[in-house]
Structure formats: C-alpha cells, structure tokens
Image (cartoon, rainbow, N blue to C red; front, side, top):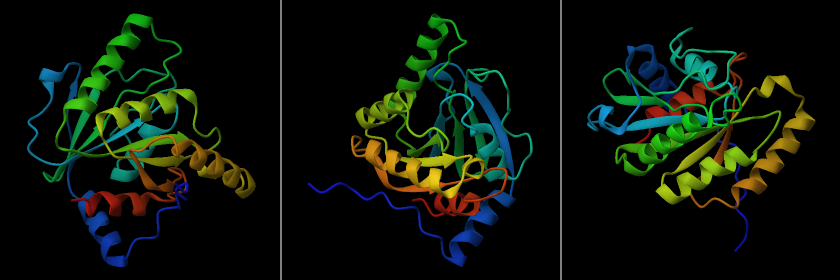
Length: 217
C-alpha cells in the first residue's frame, strides 16, 4: 500500500471562512473542569478536543482560535492544567481542552491518574468528532505524541495534527519537520490525511482551523 501524502490542509472557501468567523465571534464560555468521567457535561452536541504535550502552545492556540486573550490559561509550569476543560461555543458544540501530556515535573501517581482519565474520555465519548493533536513545529513528533496517537487509534477517534509555533523556524526547517511528521503519521490509521500549520502569534492557520470546526458534521 502506498504511503499517504498527508498534504497541508487547503485554504478554505470564503463561505467556510465566514462560517468559522461567525461561529467564534459569538459567545465562548467556560463550562467546567472535569477530573473524573461522571463529571462530563451531557453529550448533547458535537465536540472537538485539543491534545498536546506540555508547552506545545495549546492554550495560546485556543485563545487565538476563540479570539479571547485568556480563555485558556497559559502557564510556564508544565502540567499545571490537570483537568479536562469544557468550553461552550455559542451553544453549538463543545471545545475540549485536554490535560497536557509528557509531565516531567508531575508525580507519577498524578500522571497515571491523568492518563487514565484521558483514556476513559477518548474511549467513551460518542459525540467527539475529531481530536486535534498539537505538535511543536520546532521538534516534530516525539514518543509522547506517538503514545497519544496510539491511544486515539485504539479508541477509533479521528485525529488531525496541528503544527504550532511555525513562526519560530525558517522554511527549510519547516519542510524537514513536515517530512518527519508525514513519516510518523504512516503508523497511525486514525490520522486524518491532512496537516495544518499554525502560528498563534502571527495568526497563521487560525481562520482555516475555525472553518474546519464550523463545517464539521
């Protein structure tokens, strides 16, 4: 079988960009932080989740996506966010911020607790439409990223890689990272066959990500 090419996500149509803009121009409200499965909100609408290792820029991306400066907490301390955080986007769907993984500073029992919660959530949430797995463009896919991707494979949850911090490196290094990520994704059947490149600081890829979510069925 020929390897999948994993092209970059194409630029959306003006109509889809407008749909994304309108969706995130409305109310985006924090619902709750969840530390155990019984605390999840009712599964009464579609949801997308964001996963990524600590310090990948997940909070910054969510803030850029929603146009709110401090909706998702940013922190210099890896693993500070230990909950599954739910946000309601205009009453239409849930945006879910998963705990960062690769917690070098966290005690092992806490790491195991987070991993168990993550596994239970990914395996048991029927309304989860897609996971966005964030990968730092400076570093590419690491072992901890493979681990979460393997968990998504096992849970039959489609995931799409979103490369972050693209503004931090030049085009030559970006191409090297893209080649490494494309090779890594060949191992993961749940991978959506497109890659999105973003920069929260510059705004690159944010309109495309909004459009992707707005047009998801």
